[in-house]
Image (cartoon, rainbow, N blue to C red; front, side):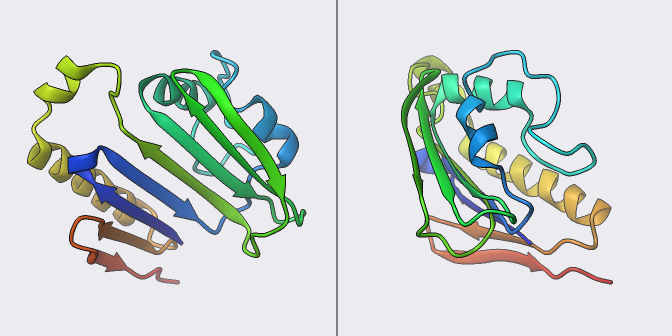
Length: 159
């Protein structure tokens, strides 16, 4: 299951899943290495690639929290302007999976931020997610408007 929360006015996006998660060891390098060309762990699964995480972390405040299926430990890493602000490991989270939060996208690029048409960007996010739903009918997708706190659409997985 994948849940997306979007507040385009605050340049905020959160994507969470109940997948395999990222191990504590893999989380240590995440965002620090610019040219990671393969996925964080297993090929054949969806997920952020290392270079995408590095790029996003240079344009925003990026928070990644993950617990792998084979561990009781949850690692949370916060990166801003390409620099790790904090990395914590604890055992408070019960569910496995990953949550990626992007805050204040384009924080250091006010011209880029100003030039974005918010409704167009929100429509692009919806369109991309609709395509992912069609291609991945075995995964449930939920899109939530974080401004109005309402579900925009909820697509259940089919067998």
